[in-house]
Image (tube, rainbow, N blue to C red; front, side, top):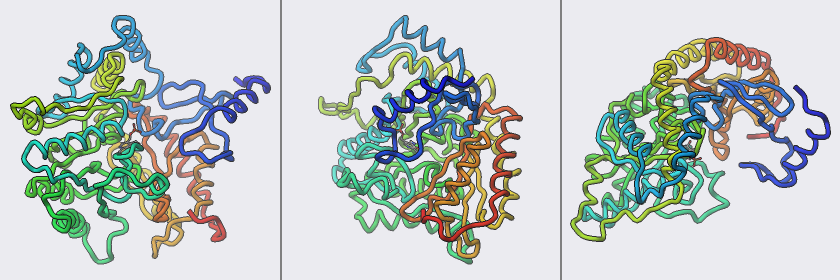
Length: 461
Ligand code: PMP
């Protein structure tokens, strides 16, 4: 259904006049897509064009769009009790905290906020206060990895390891250090994946030692780097990082904002590696983005160190909207749907098939690496396979535009400063049908196989 020209024009014009879009330039050249409605994995724009949302919005709509039960849960809760400050409590918040404990498979205290960035800020504050109360007040620094994304606020952005997102807003919160993450595709020649991953973990230990171990509060990492270009560590890396943290009294914060709630085939990504984080942060898939909600989960043992016996042990952090009753009710319904439809196992099934079907693209002259974990996929595009030189901007833009032209929205990730914004990413809803998956595979193959020439004069990334 096409809206008449004048409405169409005025909507876009009004958008241009009044809305400042996220990550957009002044007088952005390409107009935004105005989304009108969505169902399952498919979104419809205001002109009636349909697209399969291969990125689940911003890696978040895990159960897919248009779930009436979720809308009903929000409606019922808003009618009954729309708001409670989380200095107090309410039933959906309590039930959700219990459910998250069940999924984490250990005892954690649940602290509610609104976004992934918020959840990470809470984690940083908790870690510092924990060390203060534990007799280690000099432990204030955090170690994160280059290429990682942890949010947009001054602490979460400081933890982020992508310089282009940061340098115009500096100085950010002090005390954040970075090391290189394992990037198995680009590991030094002749080095096994195992040795390389061991080496990368040891870099964290080196950093701790060089910085004076009594100054390090925590390491923060995702189970795999998602937004930085789908960098999947070997199990050795994750196990060793945990072992190093434990040995040096450093807390381990795992950012499950993207990897949580079935995305990797388990409730949480870190569960693939058999580790027990001290703090786990989560958002996005918690409500499948139907309403804003995030959680910082603190292992009971860490929480118990806040029992100092004096009045000064309060965790002095409050936010107005965190733990909103409707958002908690939505999260509960969302998790119920995941249970009923077995979406964690479905993620594994879909992801395995996607990777298997697209792995053959590595024969293409510009496809360096196809890698996946759960229902997350990265296709790293390179201009020169020997040197692993990233493709130029024009090629990436063309591939993205052609995917869209064929009805598939895909992501593009990496790190622009390092010239590695060359990873095509897929993170579709876990509720995709077999036909949806066939469609994704067919479009990606068609577009990539249809682009086997490359102009070196194209703009650099
Ligand atoms: N951590 C990770 C791993 C993320 O991907 C994101 C968002 N993309 C965040 C934190 C920040 O979440 P939010 O945008 O909700 O603040």
